Length: 311
Image (cartoon, rainbow, N blue to C red; front, side, top):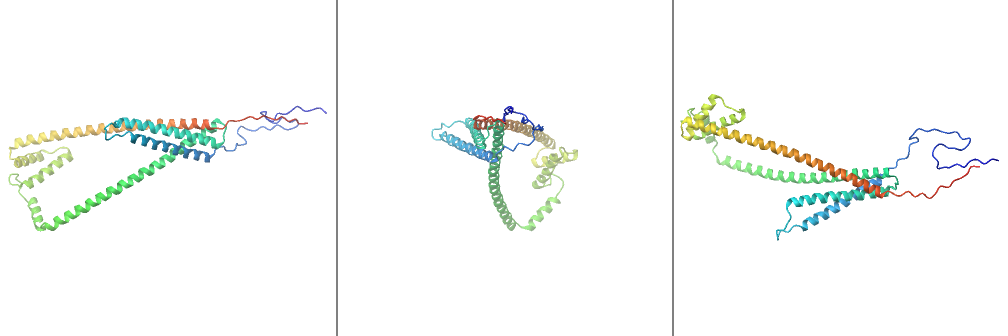
């Protein structure tokens, strides 16, 4: 009986047993079982957050020991800020590398691509956990601040209400009514008007100037007459004073607008710079998690392949 050629069970391709029909299968079929280990990813993310928090607390302790209030040998605020930023970045990178290593090791994978994906899973999960924790801290701080402001505003409102009530109790309502009637039915000649009447009308005209941006000729003449009567100066000098006040107000408005534009431009530039730094920190964190994961994947040991013969 003639012996059949040996069959290598580890050779690629279809079965080569004589008499067996060759079966062709499309690429990817049958589907491979999933190789993701969510338990390992979550454990790695927790390790990353814990290690990062531990190192950040250590950095806070080191920074606190650098404060020398008595000897006045404390580093500047800019030095503190730069040092804190560098420490925060390094702490997070070390934490993510440790988390990626733990996830790859616990998953038991020996494939580099699988380890890389597990490291990215640790990076994303740790980011979400940190964002949730930070959001809770910010929400708690905002809630505390809102409660304090509400208490202060409530106390001020109660105090103002008490003060108004006391004034209303002491004031004579009939006297207030007579005063309002006198202001509304007083003379129209600025020289015969009282100081309160002129002040009220000047305030109204100035408010109209601010709201509309300009005054009509009749309103301007009325304002000049009121200012002349109030200040005891000729109407021509009062008109010059009004024009100088308008020019000063226009200059102040333009300066305020320019300062607002510069502040908005600085805020936009700061926001863009902060966004770029955050993006760089996240990218470095992903790279650190991948490096840690690829360092933690298991080595594939090849013991040997036994060959068998089919008689």
